[in-house]
Image (cartoon, rainbow, N blue to C red; front, side, top):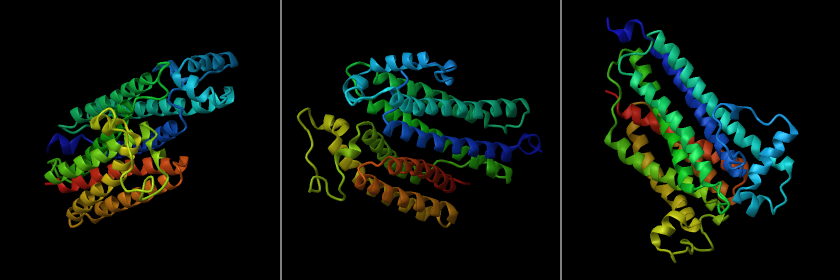
Length: 340
C-alpha cells in the first residue's frame, strides 16, 4: 500500500484547512470593518510580536495617539472633525484586532502543519502546497504593512488603493487555495490519487471574477461607493461624468465615479460567467452549483443595498463577507470541473 493510504491523515488535514478557511473569511469581514471605520492608520508601527499587546496604561495610549496625530489622516480628516482619545481607542481596537486575528491565523496554520509534518501525516505531493499556503499567509501580513505604510505620510489621508487591492486579493487567493487543497485531500481519502486540474472554464470565469474583485477593492480604497446612492442610474444618467483631465488610464485607475460605474456593471458580466460555470458544474455536483448561484445572487442584492444605504457599515461588511464566500464557492466549482 502507498504512503498516501497508510500513515497519512487526509481527512484530518482537510478539516484543518477548512477551519483555517473559515478564519480567513472572518478576517475578510474584520478587514472590511477596519476599512469602513477608517481604522487602518491608527497603528503606525509594525511590531509582529510585541504588537499583539495593546496599550495597557493611559501614558501608552497617549503615546499611540501622538503617533497617529502625525498622519495626514488625522491632520486633514479626523483631527479637524474633533477626534478625542476615546474615539481613537475605538479605531485602534479594530486595527489591533485585525492584526491579532492575522497572527491567530498564522498560528492556526503553522502549528498544526508542524505537527502533521513531524507525525508523517502529510501525503506525498502536499507538503509543498501547504508550505506555499503558509508563505502566502506571511506575504499577506507583509502586504498589509505596505498598505498601512502607504498612508502614513503627512500628505496622505488614506492608504493606497493599489496596496489595498493587493492585500485583499491575496487573502482571496489564499482562501481559494485552502478550499482547493482541502477538497483534493478529501478526494484522496476516498481513493482518488489524482488531484483536480485547472480547466479552461475556470480560467476565463476566474479572470472575469478577478477583475470584478479588483474593481471592488479599488472602489473600497477610494471610498468610491459614496460616489452615488442611486441605482441603476448615477447622477441621473447611465454613464456618470468623470475626470479625464489626466488621461483615460488615470481615470480608469483613480476616478471614483468611473470605478463605481465599472464595478456595478461589470458585476453582470461576472454573473453571466458564473451562471455558465455553474451550469457546467450542476451535472457533476449540484451542491456546488447551488453555492455559486446563492453567493453571487446574495452579492448582487447586497451590492445594490450598499449603494442605496450610502455604504451603511454592516451592509457593506456583509457585501465584502459574501464576496469571500463567492470566492470559496468558485473554488469549489472549479475543483468539481477539474476532477479526473
